[in-house]
Amino acid sequence: MSRTSRRTPRTAHRARRFALLTTATATATALLAACGGDGGGSAAKDSSGRLVLTEMDYYNTDPTMSALPKLLDSCGRKAGVTVRRKIVPDLRTKLIQLAGSHAVPDLVLLDNPDLQQLAATGALTDLGAAGLRTEGLYENVVAAGQYEGKLYGVAPGVNSLALYYDKKLLTDAGLTPPTTWDALGKAAKKLTSGKRHGLGFAVPATEEGSFQFESFFLSAGAELSKLDSPEAVRALTFLDTLVKEGAAPKDVLSWTQANVQEQFANGSLGMMVNGPWQLPQLEKAGMSEADYGVVPMPVPAKGGTPSGALGGEVWAAGNNGAEKSRKAAEVISCMVNEKNSLTWSKLTQYVPAAKSAAAELAAEQPQMKPFVDGIAGARGRTAKLGATYPAASQALWTAVQAALSGQKSPSAALAAAQAEASR
Image 1 (cartoon, rainbow, N blue to C red):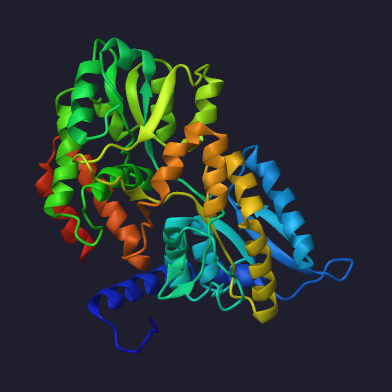
Image 2 (cartoon, rainbow, N blue to C red):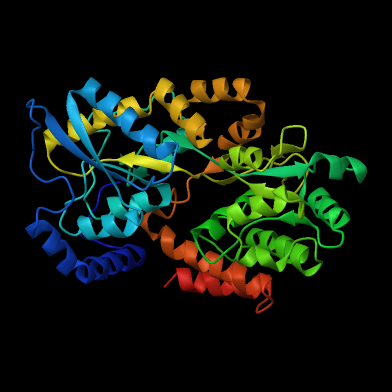
């Protein structure tokens, strides 16, 4: 879909927001541009005469911090370029600043829900036009990297959520891993005893909270374009009931996913909702496959298909000229191919974006199979809302906070969220 001069109210709202955003960062971006900035810049060459591509990401801990430059060097050599990497912890803020002067780096690895907001500024390259092919990748993963019909980002790996459970606790309670919400609620209540809660999840007032809640929200059949639908109310009511009945602690309102993993590992939770990146953390905590199991997220009713938000990062490229765009697309193509996608996913405990690599990972690591199985039904958070997703997400996590803290009923909280997101 191409842009036109005629704007709908939603489009106009988005444009006004970006106008304010870019105005607010005008001074910073002007200074960056004057100093050469941190973005793409001119077509610099290294000492051997090879084109230099700048890169930014936020990986500042191992093993990814050390592994990423090796992959970039390898793919850079294959494309005939030199890649110069820079770690920026608050990458989203930095990229918004750089987008104001179209100084986004030649390569960026950013959180996937931030992609379309950046693409809407015009500061990114259309990777499809630059020659990047996506055959063999999950269709929904490709869709999550598109904006207005063009491809602006591609994920090397993705993730979703699943249900972890303590094997001994379930066996002792005469339970089997729940597959429906009804069974999950009953199991959570039965496993709650003393200081132990049956179920833990993370719904803080951040994107992390929206990401976790969306596994219930989307599985219920709700849409992010209608935050107060009956399906959405059903999902929030389910979590609200778990907290009110004490089967899940009120701490879920402030816990991060890392906190949930810690509580599960120390025996304070019988089950938890979490991602595949927690597998090595549980091993570090002394838990093995004999201690816990992982199953797909339970669904509202028997026969349903688990859904949830696609997590993970995407590779994108700054709109810095035809030569750089073409070379950046070559590097990204190398980073997301079957071999490198599998390598990266093993490092991050993600699911490869390439279907064949994902199948190989599931066969090699059985505990990853529930996460691999969940990818086909997962949905990109920005697939329908585009650049307006961040506003909807904030409204959604605000609603979850209001409901689970007892300030509002689930229906009232979601009605307020829809009103806020529609402004």
